Image 1: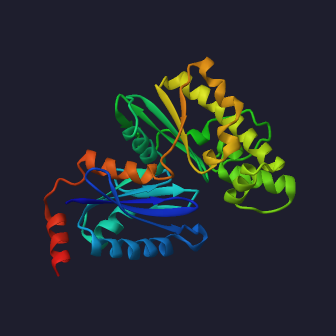
Image 2: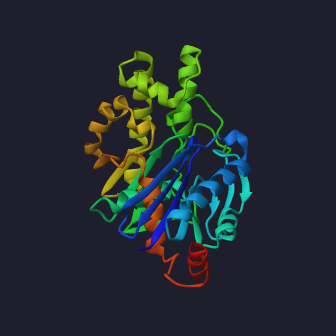
Image 3: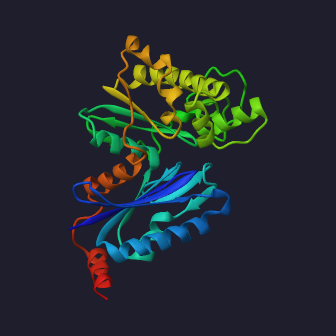
Length: 306
């Protein structure tokens, strides 16, 4: 039995999954990312987790999903503001450490691929609303990567009016108004208290009026962006996922019920946060990163026998 290792590096949490060839999950682990601790410390923690996994499963290839911008050809994280990493050759680091083939994919592109594999459609858009906002595009059954950083929907311009400065260099990008970071900032502005996005979502789910109002506003921004995306790409389905999209007031916001008049078929993810890991696994399998033979595979089998 061949197994695939998928790593999902997020701004808040990082997850590792092991999957067999059918996509069945055999292992799942999760740690807090803690980006302020720096790149080297997180990678060392991932090395330890990966080493433990390789002792139990005959993994033949690995994939790393990470926020962009990325250079997927060289396997380098160029300059992600979410993590504070600059020019990190992460594929080389993992490949050399474990003598296995690894590949790099934008985390939201991976999420899109995971959602696509679970749905009966050929043209689909995925929007991930988490620490930031990203997405992925499936065109005629294939993942559209562009030059490696396609579908950065968080940088759509919105009519926010606050002239907020984005890390990309522009003002009033969508993720400044409708991401998990934006939810936390707005709650602090209104209440003078620092709470995590998870805590604010919990408040919203039990009807706290301030938290509900914040999520309603976020939903309205996202719904407007969804219409723009539909007009440009004309997909069969637009799937919305990510931690922010799990909040009950967000999903029940009337703005989403009105999207049908614009020809939008919007769905919410039901993969419980596993879409990025699943998409990474399927991407490894389908793209031929692992061909079932070669020096890396043989070396790994030798290590397992020792």
